[in-house]
Length: 227
Image (tube, rainbow, N blue to C red; front, side):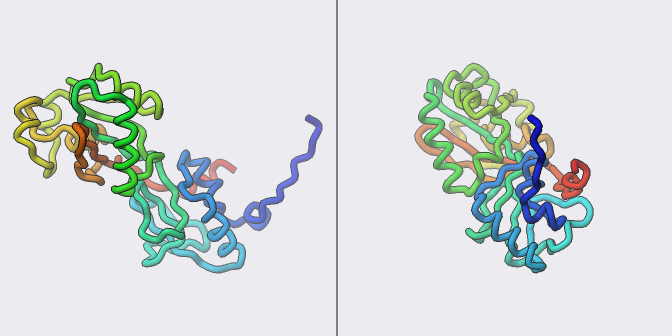
């Protein structure tokens, strides 16, 4: 275009860690962008800030960030931090486990999902995949819901879910119908490929949902590698 690029961002000019830039390059979402300025301002003033992560962190954090803080100003995780004013960065690491009655429409699943996230604290932006029993592989409403969110869909047979280790909720009715005592929790953990159950089963109106998280590692070095 014949234009000259002018860098005006203070964190760039002062070589200070920019949480939003790092999140973008890592493929992470920023749940509350208004909190970015609080973190950036503190670092620009030379103050240290605490951070906490639901996931293990590789290597040393950027200068100014103190790990495992009791009252962190920056939180990395799939679920809502306890402090409302903390900058919340969300990696795409959650797997949604879903069970539903035959013929459940997409709109009903969407409404339930919003409630599930609101009550559990799970960020909708953390979800990348939905898993269920193989009986649901052609469930129209579920497939439409997943397509709308851009989620991968994976289903498991009863034997595959039985093999998943862990302590899960129990339902005699579900066992009679599906051959396994629990659909959503076992499916979520199976889909996480060795991850762990983060949100236990929530049920209502013929729908059940839970969430597991994959085993990922947070790496701040990606910011330097991409500069």
